[in-house]
Length: 143
Image (cartoon, rainbow, N blue to C red; front, side, top):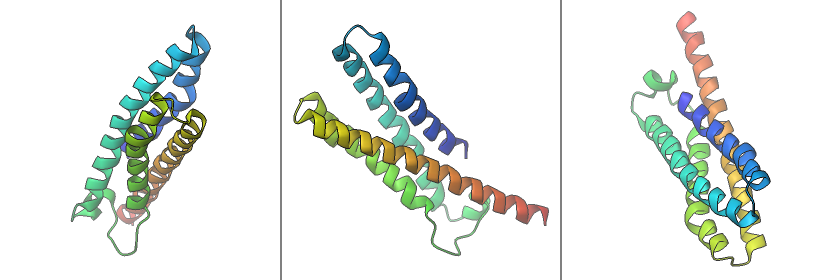
């Protein structure tokens, strides 16, 4: 569960705190944009690592030992983690190069921002799913 929390927290801090501060305090928007691009690129690797490890853990045959729950019904967990991972990859290798090339900048910046927000929402959903799984595991343990 800490991995999902770290994923969500890193997205939140970078997107909603650090990048706006860059644009407020660096001398030019170009400098802030260049630094933000480097930070978002690093964030992509954090997101890929977190989502990838969570997906791998979800695929373990002994899921009940890891997450405290057996596979009795379809889980939204892999969908949210996979979608978050896909958004991170698409932003890094499809959207970001077009922003750097200043190719239809407004469109690609909006699309990248929307995909970042979707990734953030996926991280929240994954965290929520893990909280539910932990609650089920605790209830079983106490019963």
